[in-house]
Length: 78
Image (cartoon, helix red, strand yellow):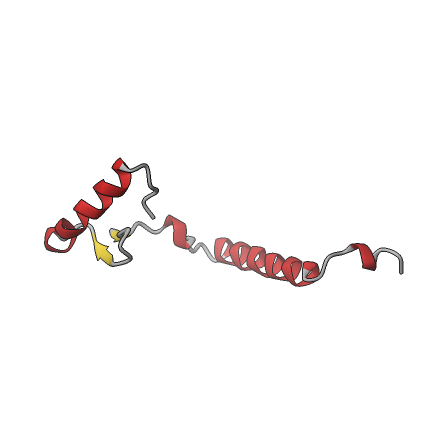
């Protein structure tokens, strides 16, 4: 088969992962479930790597300095 040598290594695995992911999303929608990105959350990850609840001031105050410094420096907040 002349087509196979032109396909890069791992392309079939990548296609299978994408196919399975899309099927999972369709199944969730069919069951009426929300996707993870549609569920609101107050959890944030600071640029220092710590995950905290932004609705709890005691947890978030210490990370504001890190976040504001990254924004000032033009860094992306993750």
